[in-house]
Image 1 (spheres, rainbow, N blue to C red):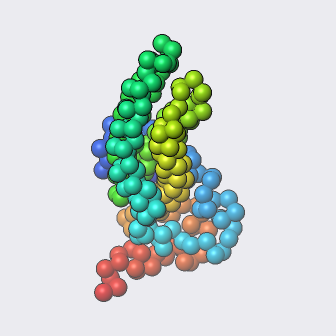
Image 2 (image 1 turned 135 degrees about the vertical axis):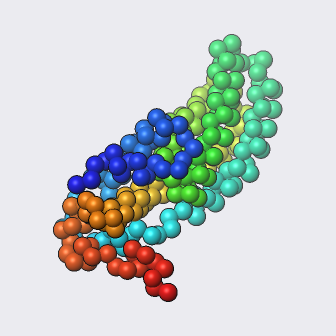
Length: 233
């Protein structure tokens, strides 16, 4: 059986992220989607209708809904920055000292993290890269979402009507992107795992994983179009 380290290396190839961060994101996405939480395990192992891995290895998996939301988010983000900067300047003198510091720090963190988040989302979705998608999902759910909820729900930040409108729209983008990125990451993780196992099959190495090996001749003999799509022509 192939080790998880080899699969993680295959899933993290050709990415601009630092090696340590890349390995951590691959481990996070692998533990979340590949082991026991996807349709290629558990009940799916005993289902004869489950498709074999080679049949899944050449699909295009970029998420169109996620890409559309990222595009509109990129267009909207300068508007949010301008509106939030103006509102923060208007109410700055009315805030307590510690809230002045909190709001400035929150604005700067949102500004910096949003640029990184959108870049990772574009790279991960268009190029089907698991580490970038995992980083996009973590930044969205662990940094951007709590900070936006703080700005919207804390009454002592003196949220003005314009702020309420722009924060609510950005929050809608964020929640939609988290849901779409979760689905895209799950699908991409399974796809890259299938490609990795298929490559080992073609090279005559370790063979297919246990869940594919126990599903009959369909999975033990990859079809020609799955191994080399150009042979159909």
